[in-house]
Image (cartoon, rainbow, N blue to C red; front, side, top):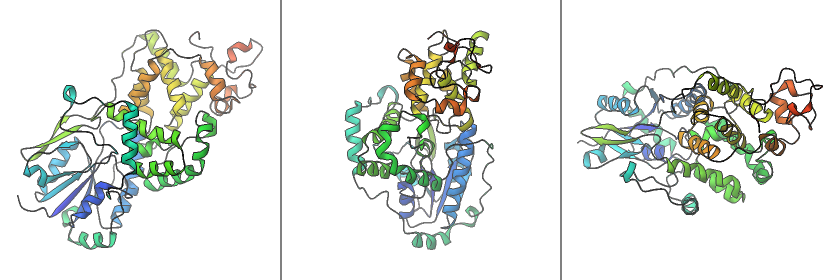
Amino acid sequence: MPAPTLILLHFTRNLRLAANPALNAALRFGLPVAGVFVWPQHANPRQQTFLRQTLAGLSDGLTAHGIPLHVLHGSAADALNGLMARHPSARLVTAQAVRLAGSEAANRVLRVQEEILAVPVMRHGADAAPPPDFSVFRQAWLRQAQADDGADGEPDWAVAERIQRALPDSLRDVPPLPDAPDTPLLQQGGEAAAQAAWHAFVPKLALYPLLKDLPAQKGTSQLSAALRFGLLPVRALAREALRQDAPQWLEGLVYADYCRRKMPFSDGLWTWENGSLREILPSAPPPETPAADTARSEALSRWQRGETGVPLVDAAMRSLVRSGWLHPRLRLLCAAFPAALPDMPAAAAERFFADTLADYDPALCRAGCQEAAGGRLKNPFVQSQHLDPDGRFIRSHLPELAHLDNSLIHAPHRAGSGIERNGYPAPMADF
């Protein structure tokens, strides 16, 4: 095969310019680069909105250096095969999990590691090695996060811009970005927005242990969607958390990667065979909508609408529907609620989260829902007093209860008939 004359940079969970190993690897070839992103087939409406915002910023950033960003549709492997067939002298650079064997594969595809700890791609399914114990994983993850392999530095853009003058004309014209629903987002898309949110959160890292369990205090980073799509370099965040002595927040970064390690290849696994990419494992789709009879459907609908009669659960669910984000502690509480109802489908919470969370990640969502369903639901009224002691979060999302004082707002059904509840329902289950 002749030497490559063009690099196709496939963006996956790394939608950023800063500290991007795949981007740096692509530019190191000294050849013209064209960016490629394949629109995910299973993205929910909020993820589509978030991605549209993110890709607009990424495209502008790349275009400023002469690099176009092409957004393709359909099966990712098929879409890339079509592009590579039209440019037979191109080499693909990707962070996608792909098996490469033989000289042809090495000449056509370069796989760049985006994860802190690499996932072996040569085995999967029953042959795959089980993930290590979390404590072992954490130690290895922290060592690797602090290692400097030079892969996430900043490129020499002046050199790159000169090289981009040789980009084929056929790749310069970029179609408009896909339309996306106009849905409200708490977490705004785009690398610039993610960087601003991170820098605003860094001074609060010291307070994280005190505020992380209080939804009304906004004590978490709210960077989950940015991390889901790689708008921020995890290695840089981990190093800053270590400098700030913020082990509890850092633990969340490690645990997220551990959940993905327990569900490897949730973004699919490919191989290069006979001159093209082939999908060995598809990306993990959202769980199927659970079948339910009329009674269970009504119970599920009440939970989704935030009308369960448990104020903190209802405030959380309404917050989720309005914003596409939910506080980590409230995710566990809300996921545990349908699991505690009689005969409720096991995947009910996971399915709804898949439809509504801007940061939906199959591996993380499944791990959280399984954790929530694995134990007995703790009394949600007692949890409410711990998580929202002054009722601020409840009042902000349940205006019909805003007039109640702190002694009543967590369990208004216990207040008696003399208290106006403005139509707020009694609890749908006995806790």
